Image (cartoon, rainbow, N blue to C red; front, side, top):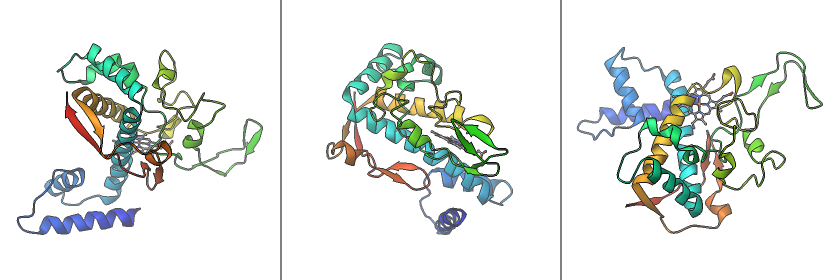
Length: 245
Ligand code: HEM
């Protein structure tokens, strides 16, 4: 991973040296600007960690939620109706509105961008539901499989934000059936930022625009095909056209 990221960074450093080249304002350029302005030493390892942990995860989650909403017009109209009622037509969504948008908050369950939690090591023999995990064993928690487990979720593959309405279950690490950000001491430190960004972005996108999927919808299994690289991405990226409402 470090090699992959180093090669991307080095490529970008070379383009930045080309005189009069157009410099996009994106995350990597911003990090490189900061590094040039401060010590001049770009801490690649730390930036890789944050770049990967924060960027891909958040954008993949947003893309999946948008795709699900566009594919499920009934859910989309419920989310839009909630926004219209709480925010009002023509008004921008702001952070302080999020708490009053439970339906919007319920749209991020089905597609964990980190399907396997980072490996952990059992510190002692532990018995879990009749199985012994021996001391020293490497443990990978499969959040993806938990999310598809029919003994936990009714119609696990269905996108139904309604299942959380009035429910106590959330993604903050207290409910082990939904640990998109992990749980316990190793859980994602970016959770508060990620949730704020996601709700704000998704809310703004669907409140401000109507959307048309470029080329129309494909059958569900093709449209929602998954691709696992560094995070779990949509195999065919969502391409949607905004229409001003
Ligand atoms: C939808 C967005 C995100 C999801 C679903 C997500 C999920 C996760 C998960 C599952 C882990 C591993 C936890 C474990 O192994 O127990 C993790 C770790 C981490 N996340 Fe996030 N994350 C997101 C956004 C962010 C953001 C925005 C940041 C930073 C601004 C961030 C920073 C980190 C860091 C630094 C770690 C490593 C923590 C460690 O190794 O101890 N994440 N994240």
